[in-house]
Image (cartoon, rainbow over all chains, first blue to last red; front, top):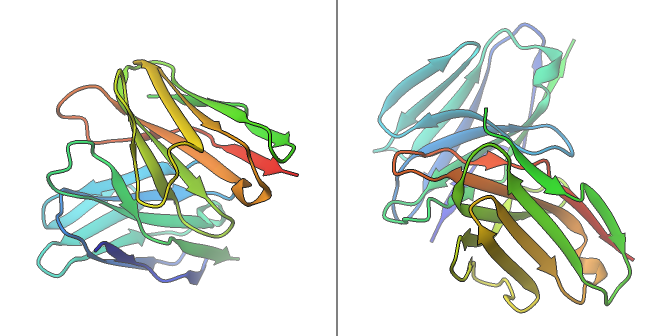
Length: 112
Length: 117
């Protein structure tokens, strides 16, 4: 079966750093995505990892360890606008449709 | 950047009626589009994969006769919720994957909020 786990909620302070973890157990693996979603809006793409290691993009970084079935999203210099849900999604290997399986999402609240 | 639109953005309908939701890729062609449903404070649940010119592939537990999907062109997919009931009230989001072997991204539409009374 497919199982993707994330913490339900996290709280952090403006200007701080927060790490959102994601563990997955899927029948195959062909890439892991992180999306940001504000309430009532569509998800927006943040990052994509298919090889082990860290991908950095401005204030956001994403890490992947395929052997551990583990990823994290690191947000630096938190801003109030970063309050949103963060969705981890895995693409199953061998699925030519490129469909994504989403985790339950992590609601991040950034406080002043 | 790649833009996906959905229409309508919100709709209220009476129980037993049908509602059609459109998903369009505005500046790229999409061989494959996906339809998701999202209940409040929950994540996206994939309903079906829509391929241009062929039948949609539905996820387990999704009734294909209730959720009709048509992908008639490379820029348009439609989802029709037939004989809608209050439990079908949800946020429906589509995404589109640009045609091309090396494209891994999906671009999401803004979503359609359906309320069935």
